[in-house]
Image (cartoon, rainbow, N blue to C red; front, top):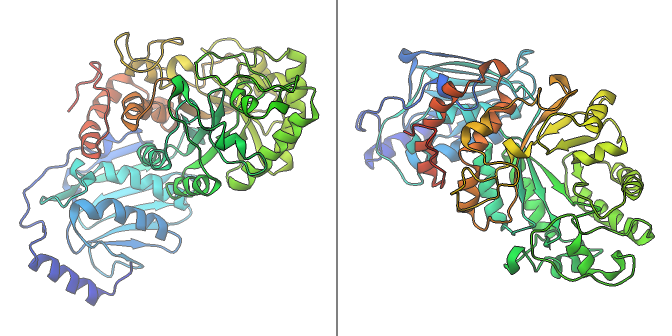
Length: 521
């Protein structure tokens, strides 16, 4: 919304007359957090207690050309709790403003930003809209937690003063949601998108198919969704996304500057497809439906031409639905596929992905096939030696780090945690924070790491509250590992900053785990 100054002045007068909050009438509130409290930790931050800025009914959002989408997003964040109009305008025209500016700063790259908060205004500068969006995530942390309320709060809205210069350590900071073991509706996925975006996560990996259920409509194989999508772990209700729903999820994520990476796991983890279409089995007989949580028993028929017709149809349709550069082809735990057959499968399937304009990503087992250097193996093991992954890195492949014993959000916090699993480890908040992607796998250094991803497998996860309980507070720590400079990595300092996030989560209704390792505010 863009208003003239005259119209804006009339709106402010109207709001004040109606008794909506103005700073002169609201209760005083000192900043809850400083610029040095931001999660993930910035490259540099300097607080200025005398530079606090106050939002008032006369504040505008001044957006450069190309910054309008981020400006509208910021307005949507701030209006419910403040009740202020916060119009988006091309110029502040002397009014107090939150300014979003695009420029050319070689220090900050494509996702970095500079944030300045002073008494006369707030400025976020970046080279791209992505950078502005990440800057807005830091800005919102400098406001009182009540800014996340969905009703008008009568109070002073003070933004902590100071400056931040910031840019990411790694290009990819991801979260994965397994919607195959248990299905999550589009609105639940969008909620998770909003939650992870706060911590500068920029990819959402959707695990769309597994032994227990198939979750995406494929028009050339319609029963995959309508039949294969009916099941879930423990016989719970299933579900699937129509192609229109999937496109909507992808678009919503893009509006939060998050790229969706869809996964169809293969040649293993395919029981839902093989129980639906008999021709995907070597003997032409459909296998029984499985809703248990065993792994490693299923395999597509590697020698059958029908298998590759199936794969190409799925890849073609999914590629057309997905604007992002990657398709995830799984490749893990294919214990029922002989090693030679596994390589045969990978060498046939990876070119199919390329044919439809996408790059390959997959679990780190794909490194055995010497994939093209554009492929990104995703490492899920416990660290240490892995010759195949090290060789891939030496050839030029970037490795995405998701070690199960640190980054898997479905691992229990402790033996008493009511949800989750413990096959990899018990992962308390400190455990999930105290690891380094650049030293995890021998032979894979800083320059060979694509980034980090926090997977959440859902064998025991059924609700959004379950997702939140397992993801928070560990996901912000993994996001910080991916974003923040290695030099800032310090548990004592992090736990203090993390504690100050709790009031924000309460205001947002996030059902987080109150770890005894953190002195929650």
